[in-house]
Length: 415
Picture (cartoon, rainbow, N blue to C red):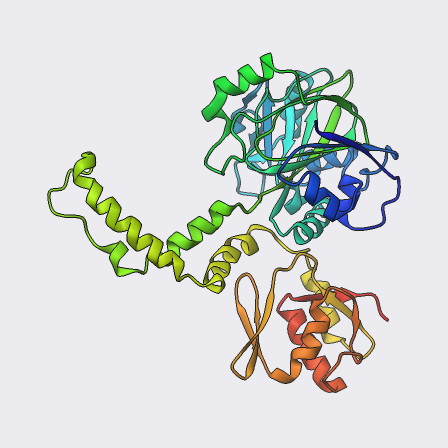
């Protein structure tokens, strides 16, 4: 049976521990990709710093949201965006800005509000997503679901990504059932198994049947069925979605690499009937043999390069303020503190006589003398200019200025 734990009211420690109430090793061994975890919060305000109902109203009324950053659903059906968007007014020149008055009317009639991609629009959630993605090694997104009193937003379904559910306000009754299609891939949504999902939710006792209150959290691996209903008051929860990198991603990477093999690029015969198994059989055998041979000679380095291209671009590091950053760079001096941007994916290696810093969208080549300082700057801890190893103060200033301009570093507190 899925486990239930209690999280202490402390907010110290890493992000995963904050959500799960346990250490990373225990969570990985018992729950990651395996079974749900229900965590009771000792502090009802544990997630108030992320988002509250006042923040929801601000997003809907004052932030100029456009589709697809907002989605509305009623009785399991997603509403057409034309029901709640309109022109932005003078100077905006857009036609799909959220109309708060229409959202308010629909919400009063029982429609659930879904604030999508909050990791791009709300600072505290963006920070959480960046830190969690770095800890997990998998891209992270975040949506908020705001449900009117005693309303159900979506019927039983499963997600194709893992989720952490953080109850923000009100109470919500959750039922969770075992998968009908374990470990679904991105192109294997629940509605392809709608009948089996409905039958499982109707006929099987739930693995979790619980009311989440503010401060409670729940982890659900992809594929686990779930449905939620608000109880007597407005309810809001944050869903932190983890777009897990599966073994199939390695299959896709390997397939893309071996496509360079001439044996696998050869044309099939003229006039072949590909619907005839007998005609296709010898070619299937030939491809199978060539594929096995080609895969056996693949380098993990090449596979890693393919996979990381997807993972590294799937999330975003912490935001930087361009104006403030420019001023910081211009005034940079010994003693100023810097640190690597949270969530920035990177790899440091040697290429000949140069040091290569690989980033999601580019590569930076630097002299070998910078390597000790680079490793210190990239370890995530705040570092003071003037205290970096291997370089004199003038060269440290040059290196740090460049990495700040390249978006690798961000200002930290003065040491």
